[in-house]
Amino acid sequence: MGSAPKVTVKLSPGLTKKIGALKTEIVNEEFAQIVGSGILNAAKRLIASGTSPVRGFGRFAQYKDSKSYPAGKKSATPVNLSLTGTMLSHLNYRRNQNKIEFGILPDAPNKVKVIARVHNTGERADIPQRQFIPKDGQEFVPSIQALIRRLFKERVLRILGVR
Amino acid sequence: MKVTQATGSNSRTTSKIDLELGDVPRDVKNDIIQETGELLVEQILLATAEARSPVVGERFKALSKDYKARKVAQGGQPTPDLELDGAMKDALTFKPTATGLEIGFFGKQAGKADGHNNFSGNSAIPQRRFLPGEGQSFKPEIEGMVQGIIDEKLGEAFEKADFEDVETKAQLYEVLGQYYSGTRSEIRQSAASSSGLLDILIKLDLMELL
Image (tube, rainbow over all chains, first blue to last red; front, top):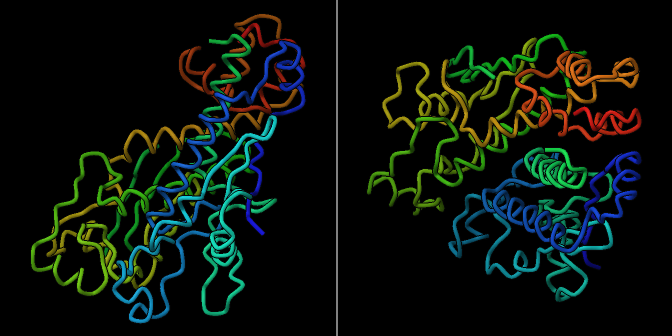
């Protein structure tokens, strides 16, 4: 029911073998925290600005009739997927062995999972698709990819002992 | 990265950017341009939503009391985020050019955009520039991300055969210098951005020379 796609950063087989030979874990708990929180913060900033953190989706669709929704309960622009903040408070990450999972995790309340799914899939005719969690085969936007790349580069260089 | 031209009118308000890539394979260049264009669009949208300019030396003046009240009454934020109905920001895009890209507005939102950027010199509203003019630049954080894209993609242009005769550090850096520039330290940092390139160096046991 929940949407919790796995963020998988590809390290080439040769690199993994070399690092494996050094008996060093690439994604240890500390590193998972750094990468996971980096992705989470970057994604939340983009969502708050009205932009999807999923590559290819651009800005979130505007409200069809702002008098009907949000009807003064909040600003009509930018469209930021937040009314009470409950759904986005459950946007999170966790480590899964040498990968990091990002999304609405399985322990989120069912209501939150449903709302998140509606936004991500566009399954309701009255609510446009506003995807904010990548599915398998999709990517984060370039700035988040750049962040992940930079963090992994720094970690790999440190493990390989290259200054 | 250099802004070579800025244009403002009712039909076209854009900045032309030369990415100064030199002689790189066409497919690598196209990848760099595509990803850089997408990155710049999202960073401009992010910065303006936070009521700040992504351009060095530019600031967004606060809204006047009257306009703020009108904007809020129409459902907008009380800040200079350059968004009332969202139409202008929805139209921000880019097109590839021979040396980089042209970013901005190519249709009916161009006039509104020039109102904020004032490339035409005719705008009557406070300047809140979010596209760089000629000679201006994006903020260092953004330019750093662009450089990261370039470094990673350039690494993909190398092949194993490029390094097969390398035996010394000098020879390694000569090969890397085909696409990377700067001091050895800068080249090392650039090369480390490409896991594909690192993989080649590991397979050929050249990491110690890096």
